[in-house]
Image (cartoon, rainbow, N blue to C red; front, side):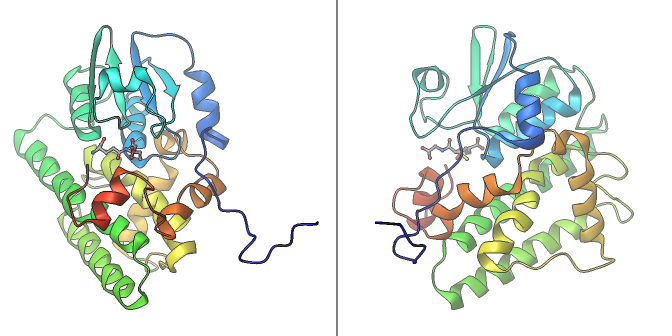
Length: 265
Ligand SMILES: N[C@@H](CCC(=O)N[C@@H](CS)C(=O)NCC(=O)O)C(=O)O
């Protein structure tokens, strides 16, 4: 029988296990063994934050693609929670994307994402905390919500949380602290990319208002070389997030946490 493309028979999209486009070129370029290893998954925004930091700093490292749902031993040995990203530096390992970004800052190799001034560092950490507490969880709540009315509430919430971040940013920009990418930009960049690549097709998320500060910021993030170097082709994101958009059972620890009203893992 020839398969037809009715809704019932339409194959479910699955998450990708291999980067594509610019990100694939970076994976290939960073495949040689090195004492600094990033264990990552091509679709994962938490990984992309750390990956952007490494590419921005232009420090040598090795990228190792793994499937975090299969929990390979090399991942669990570093992170007993079995989540990517995980970093190995020599015989020492650590995990949690924000902690890893801080670790890379502390190595003081390559360009810094946090400036020297303690108050600007605190300001950056404060707004990175805002992104982690309010923007990231709202993104998943909105994407996983199946009820149209509640989707609208989450859309308004997400818009407001982004607006708060914009108010805290340098007025001229284009980035959070001004002309160059810094810590907060790298923290939010993966979800900014997924607004147009995932929330737009699945939930009708609108493009940024023309001529506004947010549009300037989004364009700067999209054009940043370290962001581009870690970004795959659009279909990778569309396919990898269908399970979230349909709120399929046991999609991931993040999805389960959202469904049960717990904080993200
Ligand atoms: N809080 C963690 C979250 C990491 C995370 O949720 N990673 C996902 C992939 S995007 C994962 O490894 N999921 C595996 C699972 O759900 O079992 C961080 O910031 O690093």
